[in-house]
Image (tube, rainbow, N blue to C red; front, side):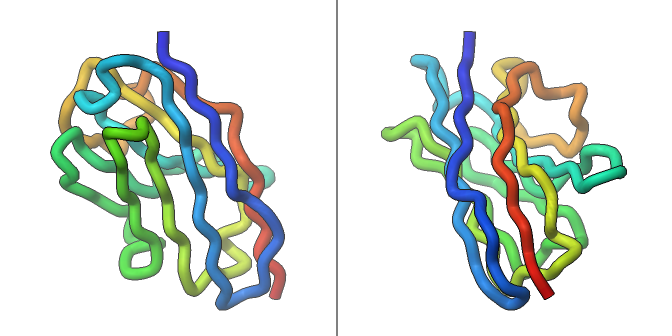
Length: 124
């Protein structure tokens, strides 16, 4: 069983930055594909970024160039550095893990484990 706990959300002005963290349990974390998704009020959950076991990354077009996903396998941590935030980035951000995939994926169905989410609010 894998447990994921997100942190780092909060209220920030447009143009500001936040760094989200995701702490993962599991002795084989280094082999998991990891991802961040988000869900805005009244909208479906959507893909944000993913990182493979080896560090290959892939981003949604809406965040490319502004967000950076990274991982520290020694600490069982995944991060999402969010810069130049916009009001439309306001959402609950979820960390997700797949112990069946080593490469990243933008599909929610590919992830077996999810955190509880952390709220990010960007004011204009």
